[in-house]
Image (cartoon, rainbow, N blue to C red):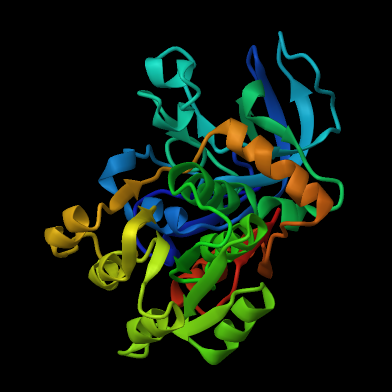
Length: 343
């Protein structure tokens, strides 16, 4: 089969397009999926660079966000047929540990993320457990369908489950032009919140406005946080949606109103942040770390996708053999929404 693999960790030049890669075989309780599209995530860059947390075996196939169709079914699989169009829940869990039994499989003791711990979607075929299948919304193309599971699931888990976002609350979405940021804007507006989004250029700010944000702020402006404070009449925001990390963490803490909640899923500008702990206890602030989300949450998002209340934002589509160029664009930050590989 055709696939893009990394044989050693490093830059985008380590992505090797190959033909004749062995196809995976299907086992009991598993299905083989013909990949039609796979969206890129910053996780792909971290794994490509060799982040120690994932202990990724080499050679490796990246790609966590997959849309395709079933081509083979293992023994014991029920309710699915060849040709069914599917998307994949990206987390594979043991189903036995106490976190799995509580329905928190994203915290499974033996958690595996498709494209990080095991082969992903930069290939014509991959094999996953039956439990990881969900029906692809018929109103979405394969490229659109691949562009939503990981980022919308992450944003939903952060805003709805962890931050408990309420109608009428102010939410600050850092990096609103990213895949997860553009998802967060939509989810927050669906919830009835007032949204302030940040981005790094006027073109990106305008796209944020088109998604419904109530205020768009350029985070390259040294006084960006003052604009947020003024928009909320000096009170600050109720929720901060954060995935930028070191560069903005202290400012985000200071912008939280009493009882405010900060949710974070990443640290693209650095992993070490300094902030004044007194703000945390004197204002009864909450800081929540989040890791992807649960399959149930992804199922909760599906009806909104089908109805068009939430919509994946596809910036650009590359052919599988153009994976290097796709990664270079991802690292350039010169995009809005999601970058997708067509397989």
